Image (tube, rainbow, N blue to C red):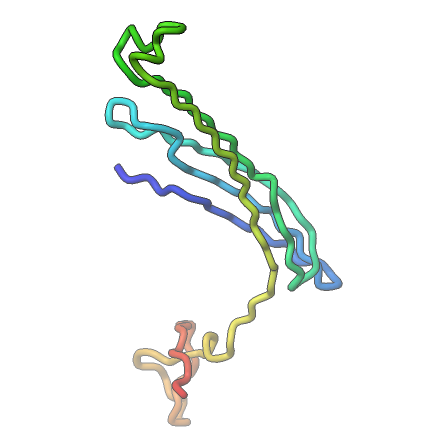
Length: 148
């Protein structure tokens, strides 16, 4: 089974007077947490919910999504590598650490539909009413954008 890894962001806007926007932001961060156990990878799943209120077209920097990861491994002959002093002759110790911080820049903008996306189209056999044009139906469909 495949699992999506990475950052997933869900933004729910609320518009206010004076071109202000409140954003409810839900973050989900999935990553590999370590080596696999019995062929199954170990995953890390972190979530964060944050609310910000900003002016429209005003960039906002969101931080605080930090992660500190460390590993400590012993290599060598089993049993001998763990000996307090003589273990270094039979193996080695490897220690590593990694700190990461995710910064996200959010700029809220209002999007408006173009006129050609909301035109009424006629389909089927409608009553022309003697005028040569059918009466409008309820079917709506986007028209292709105009070609230059």
